Length: 166
Image 1 (spheres, rainbow, N blue to C red):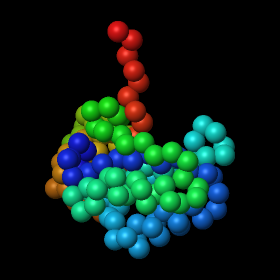
Image 2 (cartoon, rainbow, N blue to C red):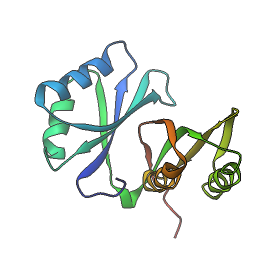
Image 3 (cartoon, rainbow, N blue to C red):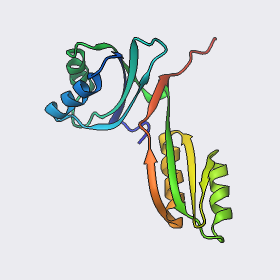
């Protein structure tokens, strides 16, 4: 998913007011735009929130979506975050079946992916891994043979890469 030419990440700075997210999702629903991922959180300024949207640009152009978003009163700024110029991360939490024979392998995989065991049950482990969306896809694929009981992934969050001094 990350870096896919059919997906684009938009960082939308909006006024931190009730109903803004409903207006954005309503716009997407009315226009038939598909949201691949959505994450919302307050920004460093309490007056604003940042909405990260991953959109399918195969169905609709970024320009068309941006024009529609700017028509919403509470939208302050929209930034296109291109994969080469941004850092994207996502959080995955998963409960996986863990027989006594499987536990060591699961714990090793979690370690390889810099994850954490967040809960332990008699026959299950709950794990947390954060990282690049493609890396989480790989982790999920490796955990599937153990038996994924439950999985939740957050929406993608992204920021422009820091400029390096030359």
